[in-house]
Image (cartoon, rainbow, N blue to C red; front, side, top):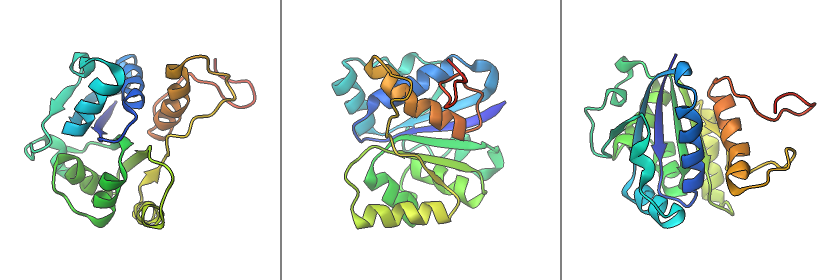
Length: 188
């Protein structure tokens, strides 16, 4: 049973966050806690891109960006995985430099210092040299960079299915058991 932090950053790509939350809600037997932190821009983008504010319908605990009393603001709470999806380049840069100005950056800092799993899902493109250097720093510190680059082997037919190719990869990286398309014919 995993204890997961889900940071939802303010870059475009709310669909990735929605599909990730849908998948997590469908596998409650694999997690004991999911704590969600959404930036104000993440909430805005969700409404702008998806046309609703349904993010609070999920069976997860939501925390305000300034809530440093959230359990995962400390390593002693033993949350084992953090996913930031989508992750803007500004947020990625703050994490890479160790600047903990809000709950998302503090939780990411905790994951790195405790040598726990941190998965960042940048959606921006193209990457500048600064972006690439920040991704290198995070990788060297033990984090995982999983850009929101979909695959098409499974011939996805909807936007949600396209986003699902990225989300399933994220969940694989986080150690969840996922039924998905696998190269070589496994999965569905």
